Length: 264
Image (cartoon, rainbow, N blue to C red):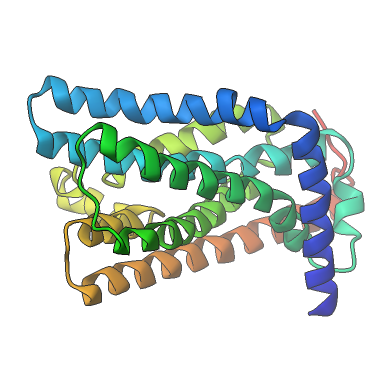
């Protein structure tokens, strides 16, 4: 366990240094963050065009949480990038499981997503007349973090299966979070979909976490909010289990046939 935590910490430090080399506070704020805020505003304005404050509330809250999913799934690019740069074999040789290395390196983007989504929750609802239950609304960032962890596990799972097809990394990333934005209740209630689709949606990250946040904002029972958050964590645990199996299969096959450093 000590080795696992040490590798996790070093992976986080390395990625933080790379992140700082790519972003300054100015580029993150006025480039990345502003892009996400504008996207959320776009959907909220659709609600205004429909002439319904209820639609504004629904669309804005859904897209504020979706900001988290966009950042968390960037782990897809990080994992594939290691194979393209030829460092995958070295990562596998670390004194911990290979999955720990990838989890540590992507935590920076999980933190970025929590920060961006939290800032959005603090700034945009007043602009669109969306009422939040202050001071209890201060608990929303914790719920966003739970959603982020689940989405991060999902992104890691997608990365595990796209490692064999590095050229498809951008397609996998975009499809990954667009599936979440389409089906998990961000813009359209999950009740809109047929029953068999709703069954599949229930195992997607953000479905239960977003439902918990909506219930919390609407003043729903604590038991309902806590239950949905627990389901969100369970979904994340399922995805990370599949991710571990996927990474293990890829590494075993790469060692066997000598393709572990394949970078095309």
